Image (cartoon, rainbow, N blue to C red; front, side):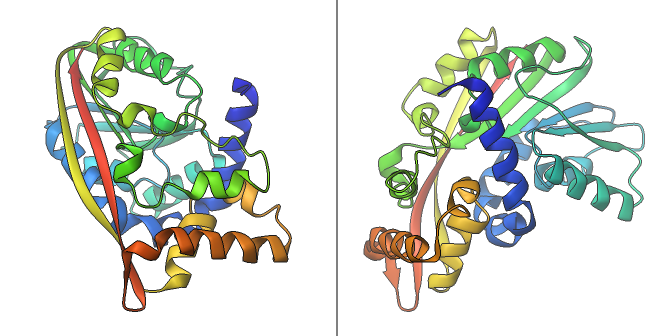
Length: 271
């Protein structure tokens, strides 16, 4: 897929999903995000960069660990995500944080200017994740740390058929290599190739809980990565897609809801 087109798909897709993202994903992503922040070991005076910061779920968690002289910059390719995070920071009168629109593969930031760089569940969507990791390393001070979380292996993520289901109806190419970094050794090798040392990798299992069909469908189609393609569908096609996706979740049905297995992989490296 053409990188420019993929960036546009991501930009406008997450713009479309921004209003629904936290409602459907805050609880589901919390285990990976909490572990990422724990491993980051952020110090009170640190300058922290949060790439693909979205609505700020990780950013505001990082701010809780910073002292009055700490600083956080959140960047995202979705302008609406950036606006939501900036608005929340303003409501909280949080002057230690800024949020800016920026391409993760071309950070408009000075080299050697941050102590910690985070990327929670964003690398899978970038046209060139390796380039983004190299940019993270470039902006880190010597001895600074980069941390990234990605979804795990495809066979360990019970919701994974969503991309094939959508692509049957429109050639969305949302993220053709989505699960690649979740395969054994791939995230570690990517960190090594970007020049990081002292790399640590952690793999955790999780459960995505949905109370009913509507929650499962909302997370998949309104608040997730296929939102742009989904909203191009006619109502009859949406019904077909809904049916196919719920059929794919049938093995995980629990009463009226679903308990869907998921997996996350996290890596930490030193610049």
